[in-house]
Image 1: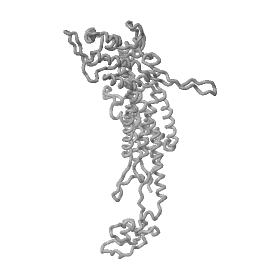
Image 2: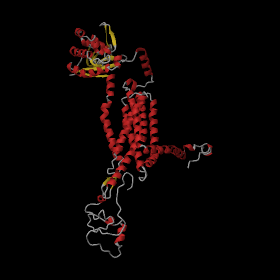
Image 3: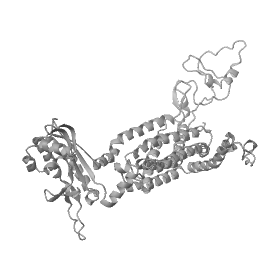
Image 4: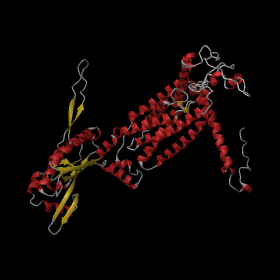
Length: 562
């Protein structure tokens, strides 16, 4: 019965001034009952529709998932540290934006830390000459980019593919060097003291004093410095060489800078070894390339996680029972392992992740290096919800039809799954207001994936559960139809197929009836006829006792009692 509404007097505490009964346990029970009253009919109807049309449900779920997955074509990847890990509404961010509006975007920096491979001081002419040669070879690195030929007139073959050379000057920040009277790529290092010229370095008679004066004026970046002010000498173990890239030029954005970076990664170790130097380098572009390669690096770990989930779900959703002879047998089929449902769990997790990322791309939210962590969260959520669905489905009466079983079980489990999913969505959607983009974008992607997983669980997984159950029932029926009467008995059995009532007598003396014992007919009837008293391998003889036909012991296949 529907609970009666609370009147105005009952809605107030004692004497009209206490706590409201809306906060009491009774009010909570009423609210919970109201939620179930609204949701249970919906989920029962959904379960019935899915069970009656499982293949259509699978097709519709896959179609919607593919449409959302197509949004991955619009996916953008963002690995800029300034944008990901700095608050975007702080004073520093506003200052940086004003600078970009007036002077353009901040340049990207390629930083190289140069040391001697064998160790030791670096401020001497041989070591500085090696560092200068390293710099010159870096500026001369060339890469190539394939440019497809332009189409010609109809009937003629297209123009051959040409290769466009890419050099550092295409995308570096150009600065006018007054001493040289020309524009050069913007570079900051110790080598500025000699204008990056070997001739100027050779003309310097005291390089240590030159570096000491520059360090005193704080115009160079040095590492592991030992200063002797009395002798005006300085010992340096490492120094930094920085090259600045113009992120606003077309060559930086159209892939040419990325191609040059790949060539630099190949050539730099060779050049450093040739010059007997040790070089450690970093750049924003390198950071983005490393972040973009997370799929290749984390793919084995993700594959292992999916395999573990498949095995775990296969064991969790399977049914096993102990047979009469002590042998463990699968309940419901010849094998109690539900491989199809395990694969369905992994399929729903993968589809929800791809569809969720596609939906995120449709909404214009970039993907960050931490976004793929959503996949591990989805595996846990999907396994929990699917075990709840299967458990409530298996606890229903097995004599009921499959559509009715799914309808009733989904009416029970659908409410719990909906409440937990709603709280998870609220938690992630709250993270959209965090001022750090890396957190906000992660929460947006997680909310989209959880929503897609919820829909796929109630549609695709339930449909596959129905298909799996129907296939098991069909297999059980086919197995039962294939059974012949002779299959129920062993060759040495004393009960022949054409003698089901135990009329066949094995030669041997009949058991004597002792005083006070029931006649053999009643004893046989109490044990279900002669078939119930036959014990193979125990040395007992069987005789024809009057009684009902022996019951045929069959397993319970697919939920139908046979």
